[in-house]
Amino acid sequence: MIENYYAASHWLARPESAEACARRAERFFHLLGRCDPAWTRWYETADSFEEARKLQFTTDAANFQKLFAREENHFGDRFSFGLWTGDNLHETSTLDGSCGSSSLRLPSSCVLKPYDEGLSGERVLTAPVMTEVLRAMALAWEPEWGVVTSHQYDDLVSEKVMPAGTSVGWVMYFSRLRGTVPPLPAPVRIDPVEDKGALVILTPERFTAANPEHVALAARVHELLNRAGLLRPLQPWPAG
Image (cartoon, rainbow, N blue to C red; front, side):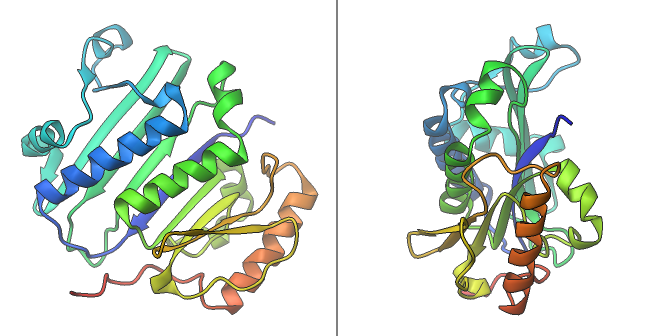
Protein backbone atom coordinates (compact mmCIF):
# COMPACT_ATOMS: atom_id res chain seq x y z
CA MET A 1 0.00 0.00 0.00
CA ILE A 2 1.35 3.42 -0.98
CA GLU A 3 0.85 5.90 1.82
CA ASN A 4 0.48 9.64 1.33
CA TYR A 5 2.05 11.75 4.06
CA TYR A 6 1.65 15.30 5.27
CA ALA A 7 3.13 17.60 7.91
CA ALA A 8 0.81 20.04 9.64
CA SER A 9 0.88 22.51 12.50
CA HIS A 10 -2.04 24.38 14.06
CA TRP A 11 -2.77 27.17 16.53
CA LEU A 12 -5.92 29.01 17.55
CA ALA A 13 -6.97 32.63 18.04
CA ARG A 14 -3.58 34.38 17.82
CA PRO A 15 -4.18 37.67 15.98
CA GLU A 16 -1.13 38.94 14.07
CA SER A 17 -0.52 41.57 11.42
CA ALA A 18 0.22 40.81 7.77
CA GLU A 19 3.78 42.01 8.40
CA ALA A 20 4.25 39.59 11.33
CA CYS A 21 2.79 36.68 9.32
CA ALA A 22 5.07 37.54 6.40
CA ARG A 23 8.13 37.44 8.66
CA ARG A 24 7.08 34.05 9.99
CA ALA A 25 6.55 32.75 6.45
CA GLU A 26 9.97 33.98 5.34
CA ARG A 27 11.65 32.24 8.28
CA PHE A 28 9.75 29.02 7.70
CA PHE A 29 10.65 28.76 4.03
CA HIS A 30 14.29 29.52 4.87
CA LEU A 31 14.34 26.69 7.42
CA LEU A 32 12.43 24.37 5.11
CA GLY A 33 14.96 24.91 2.35
CA ARG A 34 17.67 23.70 4.72
CA CYS A 35 15.75 20.44 5.22
CA ASP A 36 16.17 19.46 1.56
CA PRO A 37 17.22 21.27 -1.65
CA ALA A 38 13.94 20.24 -3.30
CA TRP A 39 12.21 22.85 -1.09
CA THR A 40 14.29 25.87 -2.13
CA ARG A 41 12.27 26.97 -5.20
CA TRP A 42 8.54 27.67 -5.07
CA TYR A 43 5.80 28.64 -7.50
CA GLU A 44 2.33 30.12 -7.42
CA THR A 45 -0.57 28.09 -8.76
CA ALA A 46 -2.14 28.42 -12.21
CA ASP A 47 -4.53 26.58 -14.52
CA SER A 48 -1.80 24.31 -15.88
CA PHE A 49 1.58 22.95 -14.85
CA GLU A 50 3.26 24.84 -17.70
CA GLU A 51 1.69 28.17 -16.69
CA ALA A 52 2.47 27.65 -12.99
CA ARG A 53 6.14 26.93 -13.73
CA LYS A 54 6.40 30.50 -15.04
CA LEU A 55 5.20 31.92 -11.70
CA GLN A 56 8.25 31.48 -9.49
CA PHE A 57 7.71 33.00 -6.05
CA THR A 58 10.50 34.54 -3.99
CA THR A 59 9.83 33.58 -0.36
CA ASP A 60 10.93 36.78 1.40
CA ALA A 61 8.77 38.79 3.80
CA ALA A 62 8.18 41.65 1.34
CA ASN A 63 6.83 39.27 -1.28
CA PHE A 64 4.55 37.57 1.23
CA GLN A 65 3.15 40.96 2.26
CA LYS A 66 2.31 41.63 -1.39
CA LEU A 67 0.68 38.20 -1.59
CA PHE A 68 -1.38 38.84 1.56
CA ALA A 69 -2.58 42.15 0.10
CA ARG A 70 -4.40 40.33 -2.71
CA GLU A 71 -8.13 39.99 -2.18
CA GLU A 72 -8.04 36.19 -2.56
CA ASN A 73 -5.35 35.85 0.14
CA HIS A 74 -7.00 37.63 3.03
CA PHE A 75 -10.38 37.31 4.63
CA GLY A 76 -11.00 39.53 7.64
CA ASP A 77 -7.90 39.17 9.80
CA ARG A 78 -6.78 35.88 8.18
CA PHE A 79 -3.89 35.85 5.69
CA SER A 80 -3.28 32.80 3.53
CA PHE A 81 -0.94 31.38 0.89
CA GLY A 82 -0.71 28.31 -1.32
CA LEU A 83 2.52 27.41 -3.13
CA TRP A 84 3.97 24.35 -4.81
CA THR A 85 7.24 23.01 -6.20
CA GLY A 86 8.39 20.19 -8.46
CA ASP A 87 10.19 19.47 -11.71
CA ASN A 88 7.37 17.49 -13.31
CA LEU A 89 3.63 17.06 -12.95
CA HIS A 90 3.93 13.67 -11.20
CA GLU A 91 6.49 14.67 -8.55
CA THR A 92 5.33 17.75 -6.69
CA SER A 93 5.16 19.10 -3.16
CA THR A 94 2.59 21.65 -1.98
CA LEU A 95 2.42 24.02 0.95
CA ASP A 96 -0.64 25.87 2.26
CA GLY A 97 -0.82 28.17 5.26
CA SER A 98 -2.93 30.71 7.09
CA CYS A 99 -1.98 33.12 9.85
CA GLY A 100 -3.20 36.10 11.84
CA SER A 101 -6.76 35.06 12.64
CA SER A 102 -8.46 35.78 15.95
CA SER A 103 -11.15 33.18 15.19
CA LEU A 104 -12.04 30.85 18.05
CA ARG A 105 -13.34 28.20 15.67
CA LEU A 106 -11.06 28.06 12.62
CA PRO A 107 -7.38 27.43 13.49
CA SER A 108 -4.44 28.96 11.69
CA SER A 109 -2.23 26.34 10.10
CA CYS A 110 0.74 25.37 7.97
CA VAL A 111 0.34 22.17 5.94
CA LEU A 112 3.05 20.60 3.78
CA LYS A 113 2.41 17.75 1.36
CA PRO A 114 5.90 16.37 0.76
CA TYR A 115 7.06 14.54 -2.32
CA ASP A 116 5.78 10.96 -2.20
CA GLU A 117 7.23 9.61 -5.44
CA GLY A 118 10.58 9.49 -7.20
CA LEU A 119 14.01 10.24 -5.80
CA SER A 120 12.79 13.30 -3.90
CA GLY A 121 10.14 11.23 -2.12
CA GLU A 122 12.68 8.59 -1.12
CA ARG A 123 14.98 11.30 0.19
CA VAL A 124 12.53 13.39 2.22
CA LEU A 125 10.19 10.73 3.64
CA THR A 126 12.61 9.80 6.40
CA ALA A 127 12.42 10.42 10.13
CA PRO A 128 15.40 12.85 10.17
CA VAL A 129 14.04 15.03 7.36
CA MET A 130 10.40 15.09 8.45
CA THR A 131 11.46 15.77 12.04
CA GLU A 132 13.34 18.83 10.81
CA VAL A 133 10.30 19.91 8.78
CA LEU A 134 8.15 19.88 11.91
CA ARG A 135 10.93 21.61 13.85
CA ALA A 136 10.96 24.34 11.20
CA MET A 137 7.20 24.78 11.63
CA ALA A 138 7.63 24.97 15.41
CA LEU A 139 10.39 27.59 15.23
CA ALA A 140 8.80 29.79 12.58
CA TRP A 141 5.08 29.59 13.32
CA GLU A 142 5.16 28.73 17.07
CA PRO A 143 2.07 26.49 16.79
CA GLU A 144 0.35 24.78 19.69
CA TRP A 145 0.48 21.35 18.06
CA GLY A 146 1.84 19.65 14.95
CA VAL A 147 2.05 16.23 13.36
CA VAL A 148 3.65 14.28 10.51
CA THR A 149 1.57 11.28 9.52
CA SER A 150 -0.17 9.58 6.60
CA HIS A 151 -3.75 9.93 5.43
CA GLN A 152 -3.98 6.15 5.54
CA TYR A 153 -3.14 6.14 9.26
CA ASP A 154 -5.70 8.90 9.82
CA ASP A 155 -8.30 6.73 8.10
CA LEU A 156 -7.34 3.79 10.31
CA VAL A 157 -7.92 5.78 13.51
CA SER A 158 -10.46 8.22 12.12
CA GLU A 159 -12.30 8.55 15.42
CA LYS A 160 -9.15 10.00 17.01
CA VAL A 161 -8.02 12.55 14.43
CA MET A 162 -10.63 15.24 14.95
CA PRO A 163 -10.38 17.92 16.11
CA ALA A 164 -6.77 19.09 15.63
CA GLY A 165 -4.53 18.28 18.57
CA THR A 166 -6.18 15.05 19.61
CA SER A 167 -4.29 12.45 17.58
CA VAL A 168 -0.84 10.93 17.27
CA GLY A 169 1.35 10.31 14.24
CA TRP A 170 4.88 9.50 13.09
CA VAL A 171 6.30 12.79 14.41
CA MET A 172 4.45 15.14 16.76
CA TYR A 173 5.09 18.58 18.22
CA PHE A 174 3.69 19.81 21.54
CA SER A 175 4.04 23.43 22.61
CA ARG A 176 5.06 23.92 26.23
CA LEU A 177 1.64 25.58 26.60
CA ARG A 178 0.11 22.09 26.42
CA GLY A 179 2.26 20.65 29.21
CA THR A 180 5.24 18.32 29.58
CA VAL A 181 5.72 15.20 27.47
CA PRO A 182 5.87 12.14 29.76
CA PRO A 183 8.40 9.29 29.44
CA LEU A 184 7.51 7.13 26.44
CA PRO A 185 8.49 3.56 25.46
CA ALA A 186 11.37 2.72 23.11
CA PRO A 187 12.00 3.38 20.28
CA VAL A 188 10.16 6.69 20.78
CA ARG A 189 12.47 9.71 20.98
CA ILE A 190 11.73 13.11 22.54
CA ASP A 191 13.63 16.17 21.28
CA PRO A 192 13.32 19.67 22.77
CA VAL A 193 12.69 22.63 20.46
CA GLU A 194 14.52 25.47 22.20
CA ASP A 195 12.20 26.77 24.94
CA LYS A 196 9.09 26.39 22.80
CA GLY A 197 8.11 22.74 23.20
CA ALA A 198 9.09 19.20 22.25
CA LEU A 199 9.09 16.86 19.29
CA VAL A 200 8.06 13.22 19.70
CA ILE A 201 9.36 10.79 17.05
CA LEU A 202 7.63 7.40 17.15
CA THR A 203 9.92 5.36 14.91
CA PRO A 204 13.36 5.90 13.35
CA GLU A 205 12.14 4.19 10.17
CA ARG A 206 9.19 5.35 8.09
CA PHE A 207 5.99 4.93 10.11
CA THR A 208 3.25 3.13 8.17
CA ALA A 209 -0.36 2.20 8.79
CA ALA A 210 0.39 -1.18 7.17
CA ASN A 211 2.81 -2.17 9.96
CA PRO A 212 0.92 -3.70 12.95
CA GLU A 213 3.88 -2.99 15.27
CA HIS A 214 3.79 0.69 14.33
CA VAL A 215 0.05 0.87 14.88
CA ALA A 216 0.33 -0.84 18.28
CA LEU A 217 3.11 1.54 19.34
CA ALA A 218 1.05 4.54 18.26
CA ALA A 219 -1.91 3.27 20.30
CA ARG A 220 0.28 2.91 23.41
CA VAL A 221 1.76 6.38 22.94
CA HIS A 222 -1.72 7.80 22.38
CA GLU A 223 -2.80 6.35 25.72
CA LEU A 224 0.19 7.83 27.57
CA LEU A 225 -0.05 11.27 25.95
CA ASN A 226 -3.79 11.40 26.55
CA ARG A 227 -3.29 10.46 30.19
CA ALA A 228 -0.79 13.33 30.49
CA GLY A 229 -3.38 15.77 29.14
CA LEU A 230 -1.49 16.51 25.91
CA LEU A 231 -4.15 15.27 23.48
CA ARG A 232 -6.90 17.84 23.67
CA PRO A 233 -8.50 20.26 21.22
CA LEU A 234 -6.61 23.48 20.53
CA GLN A 235 -7.07 26.29 23.05
CA PRO A 236 -7.22 30.04 22.37
CA TRP A 237 -3.68 31.47 22.44
CA PRO A 238 -2.95 33.21 25.77
CA ALA A 239 -2.98 37.01 25.55
CA GLY A 240 0.17 38.98 26.14
